[in-house]
Length: 280
Image (cartoon, rainbow, N blue to C red):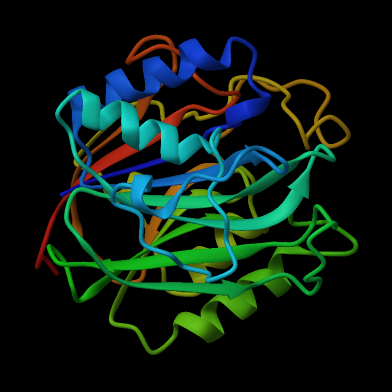
């Protein structure tokens, strides 16, 4: 199976319509089985999409409203026009930039059996940008596995430290046999004794480290939103990661949307892995 994660930056991106088309073209070419997306936005006062037009949508939160410029809604529509069908779900988490419903999403080539959404931050205020949730799905093609889209806070955040969010994550997922965490961890793999090492010491497996074939793995090429006061210079960070609660055979891990393997569509690059199901 192929898994892809990408922090989309979505509606905030310059030349967004073209980048959305480039994203759809790349997905149609690569056809990942599961796609985890972060910073998936819609304008909070945009027109609502009627339920009968929400092709492939599975609700994760009854109160969620899908609006016309919703990033994942339009990506799925473009893919359908290219002959590629995805089931999808989207979870609004907070108000971004004062005007966007911002959240996380998952797309699946096979039907979604079940969704799960839960809070991992200490704060739950929709107007507080530090509110963090996780969205998970089970699918017909891999019903024993959970695939989760995540967007964590920073290690040393005084209000919302990563360690506390990680503890809540583990508590919620502990009883599940196989869980994939896919997304923006905001904890560089290159930094020791912080978030990356905490996850590894908790018994989780980094797909990049396990991959039989892999590239350099960097998913951020410079200083981006949220990192201005944390880094003055960077030649790259691997903060977009895919972890599994059990060891799997990872055939490959590669960076997408870096301008080399598909055009840049966000301030993050994407990561796609291919793994062998029912492995160790």
